[in-house]
Image 1 (spheres, rainbow, N blue to C red):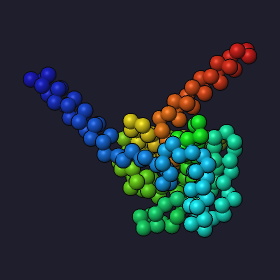
Image 2 (image 1 turned 135 degrees about the horizontal axis):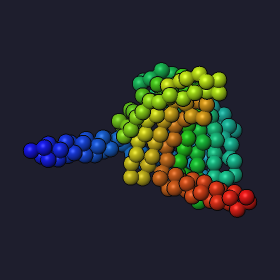
Image 3 (image 1 turned 120 degrees about the horizontal axis):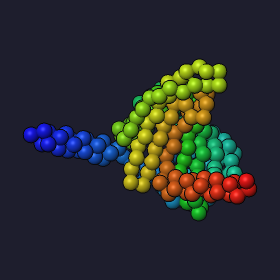
Length: 193
């Protein structure tokens, strides 16, 4: 009898995990720009979006390494407060859109969390944990993750400091690329020792 209870418990846990992963909506685009769109076409679309939002099109910075950076607003005023000022970094591999990062102020985290939940559905993972600044002050960080077959999303109230939050939406291919680049950098650095 205990074996049957154990099996049923494992079955319930497995089914709830599968249901939670199936409930989120894995996006096929970022800001209406389909994954794998060329960098040139992405710039054209972003310029149009900035113009439609009343922002200057000259704000797009092309760093020449497959990264675009610009500032705009984020949100849906019907579901949250006013549009939220954010920065965007958009990443390309082999001239194809693969990922994006959103920078924001931590005080805007709750509004951005609501937007992400409305857009992508319930996260596949969430946790709260303590972080400290250089002065030893403690802050409660919040992290949400959505993990799909091709897309990963992460939202952090505090990223590298207590003055900035970050959201990431991207294809697994980008994360694999970054991992390979990091391992190569470590190998190259160890050769110089």
